[in-house]
Image 1 (cartoon, rainbow, N blue to C red):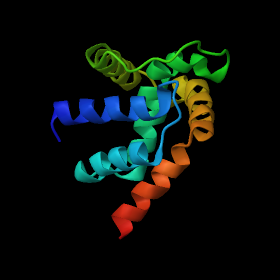
Image 2: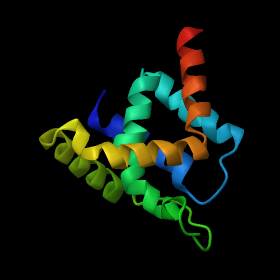
Image 3: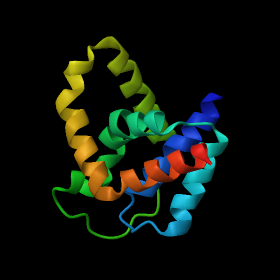
Amino acid sequence: MTGSQERELWGALAELFFLDTEPEDHDFERVLRLLTEANWRPERTRAALIELIAPIAGHNLGFLIYPVIGEWSGFDKADLCEKIQYLSERRARHPRWFFWLSDWYCARMLRKLGMDRLLRGLAERRAG
């Protein structure tokens, strides 16, 4: 997988879960197709969402703590990817436990946003 393909997936996952619009079935299908084509496993997708994407893109929803006003149509993908790359490098320099609280909170937030639906769909596609 090239870096540009990975960045495309980061952007698609961020838009699926962290725009202040309710994702529809076709949004999930589009992201599932991209993940399947890139041969991403559910475990890798879950890790990317919790460890890299949610800590950056979750700010758009106020981490589900305070309401966001108005509809926002997208992320500056270059900025998003730059921040995700920086976080990835930062995570590589620290032990896993260093991010425990952030990972726990982001997993909790993503469960509320429907991450399990995406992961189940991806597992089904890989099995079938």
